[in-house]
View 1 (cartoon, rainbow, N blue to C red):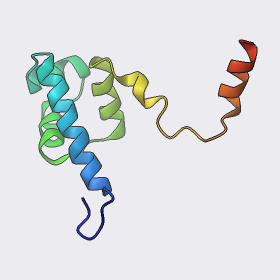
View 2 (view 1 turned 90 degrees about the horizontal axis):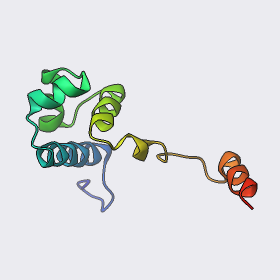
View 3 (view 1 turned 180 degrees about the vertical axis):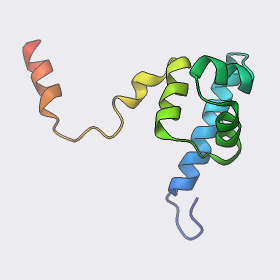
Length: 93
């Protein structure tokens, strides 16, 4: 949490995301080396991410893909009143 705020800071979200990825990795019984091999992200990047929360967005997406969580990024930051989604639901009526 921010020092003077109840709202989380970007650095808090980074650390939380890294902890969640580490937990998912461990649920799969994978080492950091296993995750690196499967995702194509370097071992050093995996290690730094889990320790400090620092990683490129592309590497994060690669990790999410091998953990079968990539689809969760599709709904991240979608503009409100997305006309594409509205058209999809209209065609189903």
